[in-house]
Length: 315
Ligand code: 13P
Ligand code: SF4
Image (cartoon, rainbow, N blue to C red; front, side, top):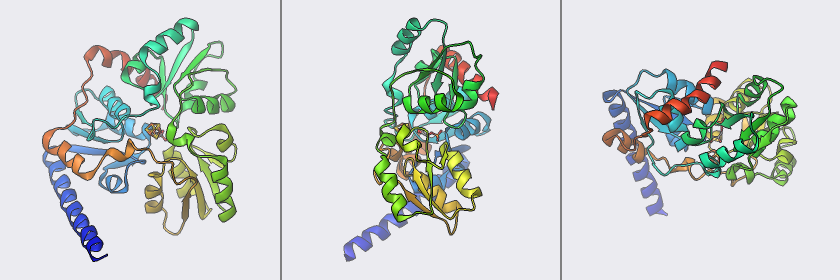
């Protein structure tokens, strides 16, 4: 027991030292730290900006910093590079990927386009730069409906790769779309039984669900939105307790911003292992040694930027 307390105290002191070094180096190297709200709490706490995929894209596009330390997963860091190619974009863990983004590649999409000629391809931002380069317009979970509504009604739409977000957008917009059968393994773990059990414990709580969750779970929601929209909803709501059906990192942000409100995760296992790969030590390594830079060739940047720019123009 004594050893455990001693070890925990050592770890805390060590983390404080690392945070101090990160803050010093950040100034020296003119770096900005962008963190997604699924990141571990200690990473969110060192973020200059913490938000959802769209918010992070906007920050990356607008920053004056020389280096962007991207605390998230690869497709997010790639999007930052596409939006601001002159900057050095660093992903502190080069293996922080997204299994959903890897469920479709450029060749898959080219084949799909051949099967449905003349379709408009909408790609969720959770895709590789190569898949973006084959797409017409990008979307995030916060602007997907707006993006679909911007497409002329007589056009067929291919939506990749998230079948759950795709189905949600179809239900909301009334537009038929051809869906790629991808999904987020983390959100897929959330079940209706999870919500039923939490509702029994907290009957007054509002149920907030991310659109990457399955339809039966979404059907139990009081509110469906991106992580940023969930954070805003909780901030502005008169309600005092919430059941949250998305990745568990968001709870850190929600508790930090909302004194006196109660937040319960719908599922204890909706944890994205890739989002948790970033650590304070790896952020420090990124700052000290410029590890690990995102490199995309110019031709790819040119092509993949088109659908992102179209999305950004809608905001
Ligand atoms: P948002 O950031 O748009 O809420 O998307 C969540 C997500 O899955 C990021 O990987
Ligand atoms: Fe990908 Fe899901 Fe993890 Fe987001 S939460 S990075 S969509 S696996």
